[in-house]
Image 1 (cartoon, rainbow, N blue to C red):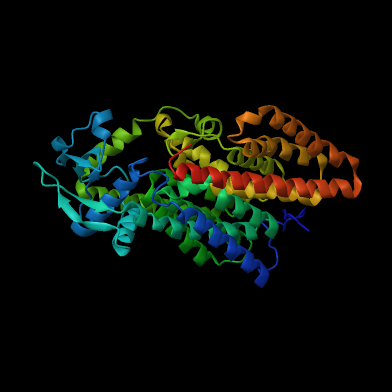
Image 2 (tube, rainbow, N blue to C red):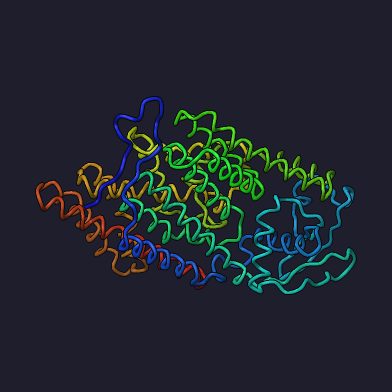
Amino acid sequence: MFDTGHLPESPTPGETPLAVDWSPLGVRRWILVLLLLAAGLGVRWYGLGQFPRPHQTDDEYHFLWAGLSLLSEGRPTSWSRLHEREPINYEALGARMTPLTYEQHQYFLVRPALDHPPLFSLVAGAWARLVGAAVPHSPVPGPGGLTYWNVNLARARTLTLVLYAATFFCLLALARHAFSFEAAFVGLLLYSFTMHIVAHGRLLVSENLTTPLFLASLVAVQRYTNGRMSRGVFAAVTITAVAAALLCKLVAVSQVGAIVFLLCLARRPRAAVYPILGALLGLGLYLAYGGWQGWSIFRAILHVQADRFKGFDILSRFILTPALVHDAHFSYLVLSGWLALFATTLNRRRSALMLAPLVYLLGFAYFASMPAIYGWHILPIYPFLSLALGVVVCDVWRKCDTVAYSGLVVMLLPYTANALFYSRTDYAAFWRMFYLAAAAACLLLPLAGGALRRRTIHAVIVLLLTIALAFDYRLLQIWTEGGP
């Protein structure tokens, strides 16, 4: 029987716990978890180098080239387009720039390339060298003397499998201290198979590293506020994770706001000094790196990027006009996750940790450059959307509440019906009647009450989720094989 955990009615005097625990994982549960992990790895492995298509986002090549050159030469050389959109003169600032044609794509190589903090570039470059995905650099024809690396993107992307596994276990740990095993398992199932999450999880982008770092910090908050982690260990984990996240992407400073908010909510405001110290450490190291590479160009790039701000309306971009990499592509499962996330935060008995992604979004809105919000920017939020939908599904399963169940049907039935109808336009009349019959059966049968209500609700939940995830996987195959 599914049972969703929640906060106790009477917290310990003077302290608000952020979560509860369920019993330790037994052998059967570990087998289920590891089988799900293997399935998620398999889904991501299939077509790893085909979709997202190479050069669908050139950020992957930026990180790889910058990391490989930084490791071999001590100076990051990679492409940049800031000079095309902004008034920045690389050569006047002491940098070197030369055009490059690579795999029929045009770039301008810049040295030093300081568009992004260095940590993820170093990780991606080191992994590419480790797995033999990088061929020794070649000189660029013409003046400038800059070099680039030939990279095997499919092989280099295997790093994302490691990052997926790290995120998977961090999400499991997060859910273990907040909700039931069943809710955690359904959340992990959604995280492992939803097409948008899988596709963006394959990209060599910094968000795929900042996501497990964010979750690790939140797990530390959980354990520390519940008395399961010492102050020293908590300080070490949060300072390290926050500093590392900022050295991957500056927007990750939004994680600090979420961590501090949760600590204050748990009446541990003094512990907020540790994530703040982590942020200061990360920013200090980043400034030191910029000074080492060239303070004039580093400061100019920071100024240019700060001027790209266009507004705060990120929720409409994330929720109403989501992107699959660069292309607009709607996802019912992701939308359902958003609705479930807001629903869980409205329940005062729910884990306060579900507020973390919303506080993160408040900080993200400060940094967001609206015209340049892409599909992978939402990666740190995906684990929470999956977990929230898992919690809602398991609540409906356990309570068999007709109203909540009807809301779940409304969210998922159109998508699953479309999955069955997909590419069958010759039978439109039949499928319309089928849809009406299915909607009527799903909504009216539970009104009979008794055992029929429970059996119908359980059967419909299993059917809707199975068809939705199977259709998402089929769409992923279609896009991998060349697009719809």
